[in-house]
Figure (spheres, rainbow, N blue to C red):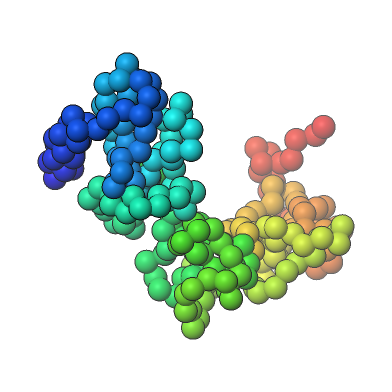
Length: 239
């Protein structure tokens, strides 16, 4: 199907290129109607070209051949686009798109060549598909009655609110102690995406310093390694 769409687009492009009159002998120029269609002019002869699906042609500089996401380009009256080539999670092959879960307003997909990659917005922000950015809830034209949270297989999810570090600044990726295991801890990427962590052998997690530390420095974990053989391959290296 993709090859058929490309063949059709190429045929239409050739027809359009024959009708296109180069404004200058050399350069890259937009089509009058289609925002992802443009022309490469060499010695006054035009060659029709298409941006990758999901991107549009930026006509700011005729000496530059550049395709970009639609939110970065003012297409003006060039409203038409090529037929989309969707894949699972990607309405088009390239670009930033809202999460398919209508309640996951604080997450989005970045698609590259049809491969989706899920990303979280910073805490308190929603994804705005019009600008391809995360913004404050009041500035985003979306309704989310309830924000879904990622939950690990042991039930942990990232708590709400900022966590202040030892320097008095909010931690961008805060960490939290495991409730039962001194060596383990949790990382919250961007404050919202939970991930499991573990200290090297011989160390335990210190929730006061947000680092791995010696057991004797962490109350309740002083005897954690008593009777346990230490894994020499996982011991922290000496400086």
